[in-house]
Amino acid sequence: MDWKNDYRLANLEEKLEDGSVRCHLSPRKCRIKEGEVGFCGVRGNRDGRLVTYTFGKGVHITEEVIETEAIFHYAPGSRILSLGNIGCNLNCHYCQNWKTSQYKFVENKDVHEMTPQGIVDMALRHNIGTLSWTYNDPVVWHEFVIETAKLARKAGLTNLYKSACFITKEALHELLPHIDIFSLSLKSMDETYYRKLTTGWLQPVLEAAKQIYDAGKHLEISNLMITDISDNEESALRIAKWILKDLGPEVPLHLVRFHPEYRMQNTIRTPIDRLQKARAVAQKEGLKYVYLGNVPDENDASSFCGNCQEPLVKRFGLDAKIKALDSEGRCNACGENSHFNLGNKLPSKPDTINTLTPDGLKTSSYNWRGDIISVHVQAKNTGDTPATIFYRPQSNGQPNWKTVTLEAQESYRFILTKSQPSEIGLEIAWAPSIESNLYEVFDRAHFPTVPIAEGIAEDDRVALPKFEGKQFPDRMKSKLAKALS
Image (cartoon, rainbow, N blue to C red; front, side):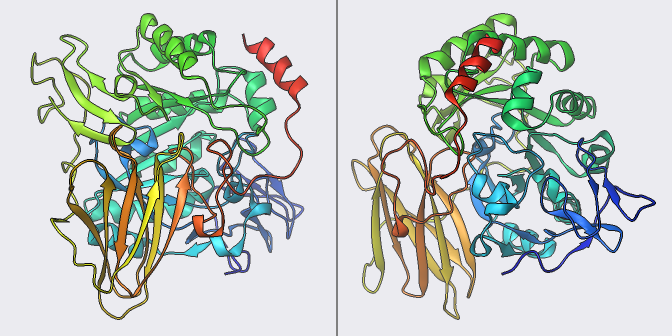
């Protein structure tokens, strides 16, 4: 589809005397001349009015789990419907979703049409209780998010907003009544970092976090620790001090492992020992819950009671199992308030079968490699009747097959992830009427656009497609690292 052809009026418009408009969604407050677009590339000026070009347009809807969004203390293990759009009001040099966040690189094949009611119907059909606004950044999808979130609320669904929250107070005021859960991606506590690496600035983000917290919303903070730039103890200390001062010690902090991407490919994934040292500093400062993201080790991702150390939620990768929480989010062993909200529904489990009759089914397998422990399965049922996909881990014994059933002509994408160290890969089978592709997921916030059938990256470090443009200079990285340490 050519996503640039149609548009609708946008919120937060200021008309100017010369026919320009000012957009009050982002702190940039772009002044946009007739026929042009703002920094994000997806909001513009048509006939002297502020318009959005992406209402009902985004990347493929995807079923994931809530841990994908750096949310550990709300309905652990529950399934979500992830919704991502195109364009962004930031341009981070390390963006893992640059192919869709930066509008000039967007290809029509990656853009899909959707409606608010269609999204809600899909969530209900697949027994999913939460819509997650995610991937590039939902700020520039403002009108579509609000309209869909309102419908979702009426249907008994919750709304999760994963964002860098580079947003104006007035825009956040419009959004807040419709969102239940916020996962805020704080890039750094340093203004120079924001200006040099994200093209944004810090203060609006801090103000947004405070506005969200004061509104009583469920809030968790994540920080991507960039190798040799921000993966240090001082960075973690500054974030911890801010959370304690402006928010509260119960707000979870996720220190997230980085993978090389976009304009910062000439480096390595964040060393895990640096993340662990940063975590220890944040805990010592007084934060109650500090987790490591994109690190599958149980000790770094599981939740423990702060009073008696009882394991409350066991996690490996994106797999989470509640062990010792009561319905009020308290420790079953000692009664300590562990600041969990179990949501309206406990995690639902997919249907399973013991054995599979292979006659007529297509089959495939995938082996985990390196740090890649998740894949997206994108499938379309081309038939006129419902059809089913079957999957199970390759591991010891004969685990049951889990199932996903697609309606006639339904297109659906869902995540499969390694759930324990002994698993070596996946087995997948599907009905003849289903067309299916696999996509490797390099990061829990990564939305891949190149299927395995079209090629795989040479290693587990930089995903396809690789950005072929100018890289962030090493001398600038060194200079920035010194300024931040």
